[in-house]
Length: 390
Image (cartoon, rainbow, N blue to C red; front, top):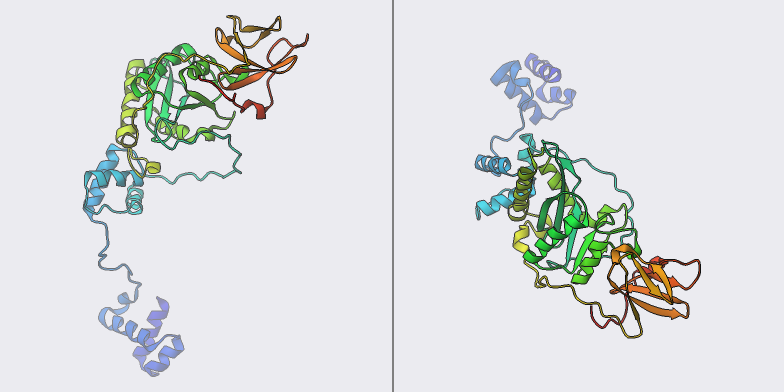
């Protein structure tokens, strides 16, 4: 500002030519004439810096889209990508602005916050699991962390989802994390949606155990129905990341618990319906889970009998969890009570023990051996081959 005022005053005195004055101030004559014209029109006040903002912006977002966006945001607490998908459904063929434009509008209104950037650690090798390339190939089951309602009642939400379509099949409160509470819920789901091929879970009760083969009463029951239970590695929830990401949405929904158990169950069911039928999913191309999922063609039926190959000795587990082999009783596990096991002799005094197609361990005819000896990790993944039928 001081340089501009000094320049126009030097021009006004007329001691030097206009060109010499411009050279002494290190500006071009075009720039000098510009400031001189401004001085003649507005005096020293015109020397102030003016805004460079354009008078018009042809590509500016119309105000109608701002109003529509805020109205949809009041109904759904989603980000700009999902809100754009909803706007495209409600206003088809009207040129909905890009997600980045909607994000800027939400940011100006203070309706979004910058996401915290987490440090990326080296990726750990994952256990080989079945790929969910179609609905009902792989389901996931887990408990969302327990909480209490306003009246002090404990709530343990049991969730089941289809990993391909992201469809939440169940979000049910149970009294405890036990086989007795979980089995009726799964029976209801199987009758309604059919059977999956695989059911993925963590190693905690009632899904897994520390016993033979990591199997529990629930996983044994699933195997008898023709469902293959899958377990993630301990302390690696990222191996079931799709289901855990759904839990994050559920946690935000139940941030304020309901008054009592029935009202909390109703709230969870409302969330499930919204998640399946109203919330677009980026992994599905912003489609709804209900648009991708369909019921399984495998209907629920009675448990199938286990038939082992010829040459295998079949032993039925006693109620106490033991079997008889070579005139000696060995402990297998109470979870296998009344279940038939296949014993494959590999040496005169050593055999492998199978349940269905799963290798549980080995038995040794030795005075010090009183139970099942786990096999190496590489042996745990071997299947019994060939199998007649299961």
